Image (cartoon, rainbow, N blue to C red; front, side, top):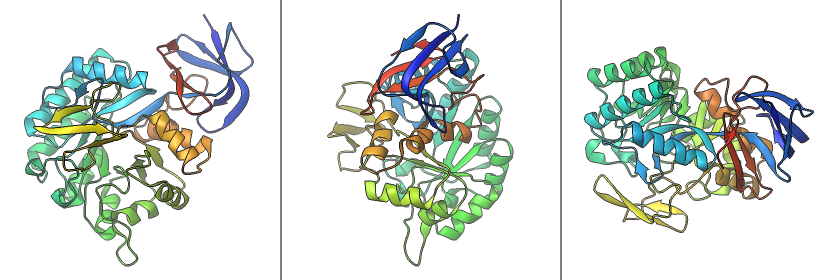
Length: 373
């Protein structure tokens, strides 16, 4: 049965359409325009494609770690959907080889089980630069071996998408090329490399960067660093727009310099979707206070952020146009992982949708046309 949803504005993935209806049947978008079935009037606000988060370390009290299994991934994906991310890449930060194997096995099981919202995995490490470790455990950071590469090449054949964050210092150009050739999304991050080294990695196939500005060599007048290479390049980059990881002025400058390919990530942790104030990660306490997640020494450790909040920060604090901010949470991350059926509201697309109030609060979420919030 067809049903239609009317909103003050509909964002189709590229444009804001005033006073429009989105019609849905059998979990797919059938039309944007006149209603084709019973109408649900959502009132003020914007109806947009379901948001897609490509960097989620955990949610719902569950952290992606060595004990991650199918049930854990189900919890994380369901919790993120309640927060507006109807699709995500559960993310393992630097850990042991056994933990990587366990998370990949869980991801393959989630793929077979068709877990709602599970779009693949993101492995953020362990092949990083300890000089830019952030909250990662330096003792577990190491160069990529032939066995590591074989594991990743096997994983990508059995997952809908696989993103791997590496530092050029810990991998070879040949390893980057082999990963890219098999469909792995190679993202550069946690690196102290020069702009020239970053550009060589990009030429080898790396087409993304992980949380722009954070845990990477910065832009200087004589040493452009990783930040300069990303802003000048034509690839993609994730961005944590909580106003803490990157100041609003820096957000404006970055988005003026790089007009295409920037997408939002939450970088959220197990505390997302809960009222918990702390948890333990690898024997270290992660503390939640005043919108921050930190180690006990004050090092930022992920973010206490949702994608609707990130959109609000971009619009209200950084002055970014609403249609661009919304595309950074929907259409662009869908492009990164090659999902043409997600991230937009076009006929034939999956009816994953979010409704945001005029002040960017989440007021409704639909997965496959079914309302879950």
